[in-house]
Length: 364
Image (cartoon, rainbow, N blue to C red; front, side):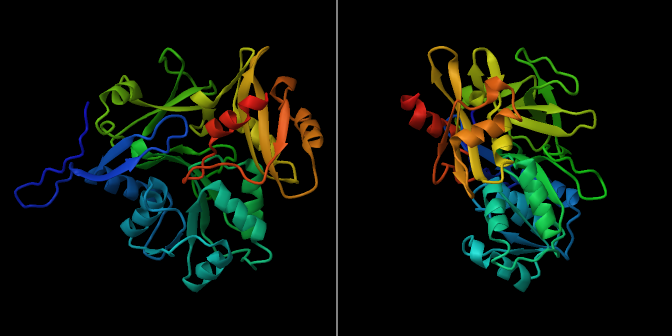
């Protein structure tokens, strides 16, 4: 299918419900970014699904901190808020030092952000005199939020943290944890919202609960195809299901736990290792502010596990490796841990593991 993105206007001169409303681009963390045309109906349906899932009303006010050129900020926050009749507060740019002042001044009830922003706000919370109550909920999306960080956010800000999962190809949200009193499951992105979610193996066979594999989705919010890229479109679908290239597992209640990206899995001597598992362990260490694991070429094992960390306390590589050994199987413990000042991320907050692998592969 070739998508060219041309808007065909009806006799009234206005776009129809099936005409394209947006042309967004994928984040391109494991391949080149691809154009995703979304129709007016798809965008509206997605915004209404999100508003319904979080029980948004005209009394809600969202503080928009994510850029409006991606689905997270545009559909997941701004349009979902407007679809509910609520108020969207849009500062010129995100400023951690001004965030809570704006939150209080405008009576915001929630915000949604990538983990990096949540972590910055948490680290600054005391000196910025952040409130310990008042928000109805906090939402996290676009990258994995470590369970330890989620727990700290809930404790410090006195609000439930709802981790969600979004895809540009599905007009943003495809899964989310629910509001109380329904259970929130740390380490998961909740259950399907607006789409169906399934897990398949390498042959395309659908797997039962608790079996890991590739996440696939289908439903009315899913795109028709990539813009002007019939080969990528054909490769993206299998029997009507969109292949996300994310790996994960559904539990018995339909909650989805993401384990990584297929192209980011580390293959160490035939053992497939999800970098996110190592990230979570490192982030549980009190001295670690940020962490990212990745694979580098190795003559013996094919790939070896490395990691980079940004510290917020006193530690070093040897102590961090010892900490990992108490929580991970030996083959998953990073062979090398480098202390760095920052970790490369794209504009949606996802770690650029390919860049890390390229940067450090010469040092293996």
